[in-house]
Length: 243
Image: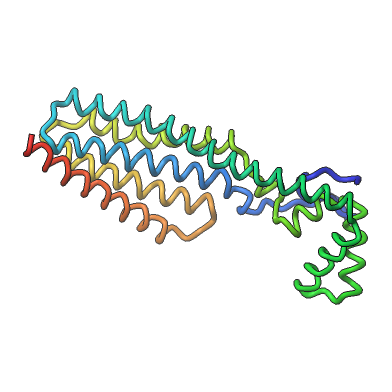
């Protein structure tokens, strides 16, 4: 083998020409949007729920700070555990593929040729491609074309955990700042309005980073954020009245 597993695009005979496709951002972008969205929605909902119950400003701010810290740690741990599970599966599949290549390389070449034929190559061309790609780097070729594992899609637990924790903290800090600067009497309404504006901005930024049209992402985050805050406010008001 002359290549390196999951090493990314290979240089061609005409030079190392690499294009910056936006799909390369999906790993960190998903974690970042999830973290920021959860930070805004959960913290704003918590603040609104506590405020709707008739709590004091100190109680509202304490609950907001506690929600920020607990949420950031939870997001980091959850992302790390879940993405680590994906990484474990990828490593197991690659190890199995490596054993199969060592024990029965002919069968593996036949399997790869069948994949290329189903993608449109005639049998003769598929066999030529298999022989050349296998000679270059058999394991990376099978990882990409059989297992769909590439450097672009491979699981990165630490990156996902740090991105989620950081973006959750940044998202949660926004509604917490609104709560700190808003009079207690109008905190529920102003918190809701401010948080919906933050969510709209997040939806737009996520769409921009991913190269997508912003209308649907913005509408999506506003709808679910408004629903979460409305439900939490209603429950907080009911609990406050009962207590």
